Length: 253
Length: 249
Image 1 (tube, rainbow over the protein chains, first blue to last red):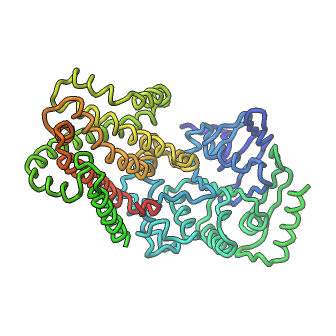
Image 2: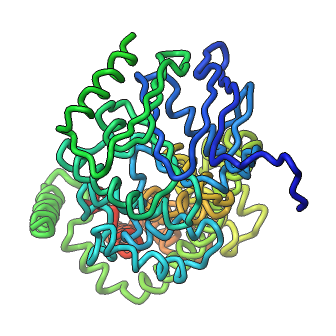
Image 3: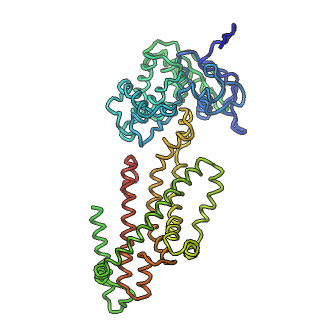
C-alpha cells in the first residue's frame, strides 16, 4: 500500500465524538479520547456511566450510534475485534478444562490446534505464578489464580490493545492489591497499550498513566488527570493520595 | 452407606409384600407373594429370559434412535432460531398424543414386528433428551458467548468448545428420564400387538391368571430400567468428572 504524504499516524485507539444509545437511553455521549502507545489509560465512573459499553465498543462487540471508534486505524467491528484482547470482570473459565486448556482457549478460537495452543501456553505459567497448576481445574484454583489464568488466556494471542473491564473487581482486597502490583510489574517489563475500566479510583491512579473520569448516565468525560508518578508506585505515596482525592472529587461533582 | 440403607429399605419392602400377600383376605390371583414370584422366576426362567431379551433389544434400539434424534434436533434448533420457534410447539404436541391410542395405529402402520415398538420407545424417550439438551445449550452465560466472540470464535467453535460441554449434565438428566421410561414404552408397544417380548408375556399372564409369572415379568422389567439408569449415571461420571453438583445421583 502506498503511503500518503499526510498519512495520519495510526493511533492505538481513538474515539471521535462517540455516542451510544440503547433505545431511549443514552449510555455514552460525545466521547473524544485518544490512547497513547504503551500507556495505560484508566476510565473511572460511577455504575451506569457506560464503562463496560465503552470497552465493548472498542472490542467490536458493539457499534457506536454516532462517531467513530478506530483501533490501529481499523474501523469495522470485525477488525476491531481482531486487534483487541478483551478481558471481562469475571474470569469465565470453563470448569471442564484444566488451567492449561483454559489459557489456550483464545488461541484455539483463532484456529490454532489444541495441542499446539497448550504448548504455547505452558512456558508462561511460571511467569504468571501458576507453575505446577497447569493440570488443575478452575474449581481447585484460588480467585487470584483464576484471574491470572484469565489474564494469560487474554494475552496469549498477542493482540496489540489490552482491554480490562474491572479485572480485579471480584477479588478480595488483599488478592486485589497483589494482582495490581503483579500487573504493574508485568507492564513495566513488557509495555502495552491498555484501556482499563474501573470504579475504583485508587486502582486507577495506582496503575494508570492517565485517568479519565466519566459522569453518570449518560457517560461523558468530565475530567482527565495525568499521573506522572514514577514506578514502582506505592499506594501510600502522598502524591498518589492527592491525585486520588482530586479524581474522587471530579467523580462526585 | 447409601447402598446399605437402600438394601435395608428393599428388604423391608419385600417383607411387607410377603406379609400382605400372606393375609387370609388377599386373593392369590390378585397378589403373588415374593416367594411365589421367586418360584416363577426359577421355573419359567428360560421363557422369561427369551422374552426379556426381545424387550431389551427393543428398548436399546429405541433409545438409540431417541438419542440420535434427541441430540441432533436440539443442536439444529439451537443454531437456527426460526427452526427453534417453529419446532418447539410441535415437540410439545408430540408428547400430548396419548401413546395408548397411538400404539395400535403404529402396529397397523408397521405391522407386528419390531418397528412399532421402536417407534413408541423413541417417541417417548426423545422428548426428555431434547428438552433438557435445549435448556443446556441455552444455559451458557451471555458473557461467555461474548467473550468467545471477542476471541474471534466461529459459531461452531463456540458450540463445540463451550455450549456442548456445558450442556452435557443437562443431556444426562434427560437420558436418566429416558432410560427409565424406555422400558414402559417397549411394554406399551408390545401390548398393542406383538408375538413375543416381556410386555406381551405379562399381558398374557394376566389374562391366563398366571399371577406369579406376571410379577416375575414386572421384576425383570424393573431391574432392566434400574440397570439402564445406573449405566447412564456411570457414563455421566466418566463424561463430566468436573460436574460436582451431580455427584449425588
